[in-house]
Length: 351
Image (cartoon, rainbow, N blue to C red):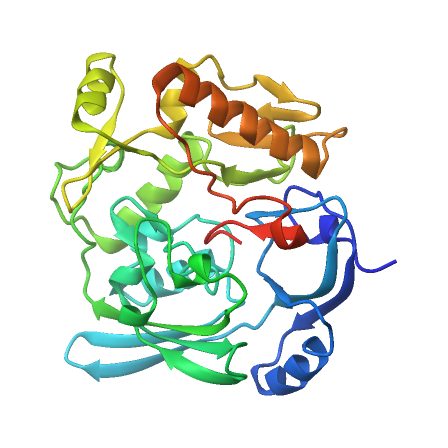
């Protein structure tokens, strides 16, 4: 039997991979590619496993776990700095490094589990920042062309929690990420009220960099957004739905009922998926299916317990989405890719 994917995902679900390779040395990538392409099935790339739902049947091919580490800094002149991180570098570690070095640009992405290489996949974002805001370049392996190449941001198809890497799954493997950051003592303007309250500052203020980064970590912990080390909510993959786009009439109705609606930079409106779930009756701690529960802190995070399977987790996602569609006429989109497609599905930046 191959390596169990349950041993490499925070949900602790998933059967065996036919072949499991770990990538730790950037110089050894060509050898790993040679080993991976010997299979008839396209390799699947796994990050930290914090946003991965592996099928009960596993994966009938090669799984590559990205475990390369390292951060390099290069001055671009003046206050501009280029920071390049290997794909396997934990995103949280990269954020902490940049804050310590006095580099602003990703300070509001602290506390998000997963690897740096996974962040561009769903254009990871929080508190008004997203990884594409500061991206200069990605080094990727193009499986279709069979060689390593650089991708510029304009080639990545970035949008709200999406990218070319999501819409063309399996085409590219991200090897490293280069960001343009600014050497300064203050953070980016605060755009979210809960973060302003946590600091406390007014909206639009630019607090000291370290204070802003710490406030993010505190707010995430208080709202149950961190990945617990143990307890009933330890087996999870974070938020399971994206905040949905809503029409203006729907937004008005939601606001009248006390629900939050966020206005995007392009003027479109997004409702809170978590609020919609709670209004539908799925409160924190609710059992949704065999071994699958809403976390004790928030309905938007599903957790797995002893009798959970990938199949029961998938069914629970369908139950939640159907309930919101029936009650609110709003369609939720899985933050995980459709589980069990390509036998192993990944969702987003916290991978």
